[in-house]
Length: 287
Image (cartoon, rainbow, N blue to C red; front, side, top):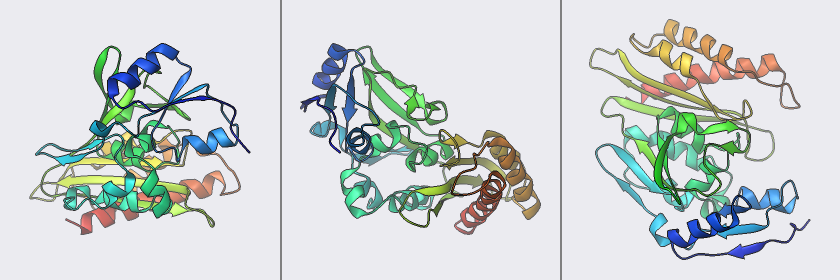
């Protein structure tokens, strides 16, 4: 099926792109890699009269690292992030998540900003960004503002990014020494989409006490889900089997899965429980 007709723009600068979004006032949509948006247009799930393709804005393609965070331009390809060679233990969670996204062709076309901005609850990078307590910088006619990933997602395909704003940078914060994380994805029998996926990042002190903990889910609800209460349970004590079990039970109570052909509500809760414990154990083994 072909999409409905639309006007296509390929601006060469950020200012030009923002000007187009402002001009068409809510009727234009940003196109980055297109791997999330184009299937919706082709199936006519949605129709958009104006597309603003930001792929040619070279200033939005980069990966750099400082002592506080890994900074990624929004049009950076997923494959470029996957193949970045300076992750270290702190950012293994990113490498695992990017490697799990679809196939090499999709990763070579899809962008980091697009994966995060689309608001698809099955996308992988939003959960990673939530677990790390990361953020995005968005730029619009009024200038720049920063949005925490944990406050970004409002509903399915709905974010707190305004119609005339563009994600320009994604910040994955550095948790320091004695920190590590993991990404686990339980895939459907066919294809690369998940029934559930979990991102976990943790940090312990020299005595083995958990100082920071972040856990987030993909594909379990209408949005990516930050497990706030379960994460809080882990902080302040040693990460023992008892502590992991208690936190996993808390995580199960934070979600409201829906029964479908991929499983019952109870099956999905049990899957999250097991993935939470497995992801925590795997992260600990990396320290």
